[in-house]
Amino acid sequence: MPALTRKILSSALGCLVILAAQAVSAGDWPQILGPHRNGIADDDEVLADAWPAEGPYTLWQRAVGSGYAGVAVADKRTFLFHRVEGDEVVEALDAATGKTLWTDQYPTKFAPEVGSGNGPLCVPVVEDGRVFTYGAEGVLTCLDAATGKRLWQRATHVDFDAKPGYFGAGSSPIVVGKLVIVNVGGGSKEAGLVAFSTTTGETVWTKTAERASYSSPVLVNLGGVPHLLAITRFRVILLDPVTGAIRWQFAFGARGPTVNAANPLVLADQQGKPHLLVTASYGVGSLYGAFDKSSMTKVWSGVDSLATQYCTPIARGGFLFAIDGRDDVPPADLKCIQQATGEVVWKAPDFGYGSLLFADGKIIATKVDGELILLQPDAAGPQVLARAQPFTGTLRALPALAAGKLYVRDDTTLKCINVKPRVR
Picture 1 (cartoon, rainbow, N blue to C red):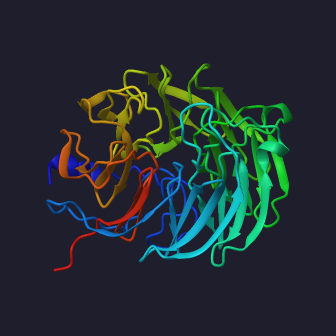
Picture 2 (tube, rainbow, N blue to C red; picture 1 turned 30 degrees about the vertical axis):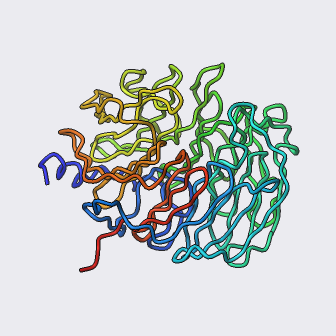
Picture 3 (tube, helix red, strand yellow; picture 1 turned 120 degrees about the vertical axis):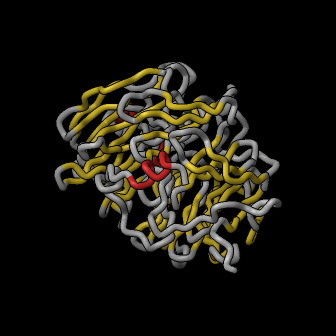
């Protein structure tokens, strides 16, 4: 293993320590971008160091309907959210076999303003025996995760006069204690962010006149107190998740045909102090700075370091690994960036757009063109360990990784792929 790689993997910056993670079982991927909403698996996840020449083995696969919602995995179940003809459908699958355990569905007439994707975009959230889904028309549903019994449902876009945006609702909800908080975007009713009771679905608080983004909120622990970081259409907001009280906010994004879609990243500097990275394409770029519950102080910003459309960067050992650019306007480059300064350490030109996740000292890139790449994160340069091409369709849904199984879907097929080491 290269010395710089060892340095990255042994670094004790503690970025996960300041994240308020949900209580999950080992090997679960219960929400967007995993246990901590940052694309990083828990330490018990183990990956193979290489793949066979024919690619990693597909354990099972099944047809899926439309949509770009990745799956969630919890308690040996895989939760699929897609559109089948005129319904948005939630299915619980046996994670080992892909067999359907239960389904729930409701009608939809959604059609996007841009593009042809008419299915849901939001990854389900599984917490405390419940699964929450948020559909393209803003329908928030709470189901019993074991049985599929519908516990409650809210038509948030109707209730709060929210607009669907270019592609439909695309900000995955977050569960905080007994609240499920959603970037609804009901600006005319001061309901940009809304908290609902996880038990009854009743509205607990509403806050801001901001429209919704495609970025999903994350939790951060500041002085032992959980806070929520959310990127809306044009702002970054830190607030108290219990009351909705805003601690601070600043402008972020650009008007016109643009989106904010990458999740905010909570990081730590070498002294362990909390820092924030937000990034977007469309000429917006990135902003990195120190923050507490009172204020945010910029350290660096701009488009030259990083301006990614929806790929949330992977942060390891003081470096950021990210796909810079846009899905719809190539080229897109794989980059390694110095966290503290924004300096580009290296760039792999025309890598192709996609998403990244990190586990067991390695990165898996799932690319829009259907290719999977296994990488060693190294500040000396991109170290490709393996490649595979299990898909021929368009792969935009975020992947999930649980117990050595990679769950990936393109526009027609969901596959469960074995990426753990072979047993000899």
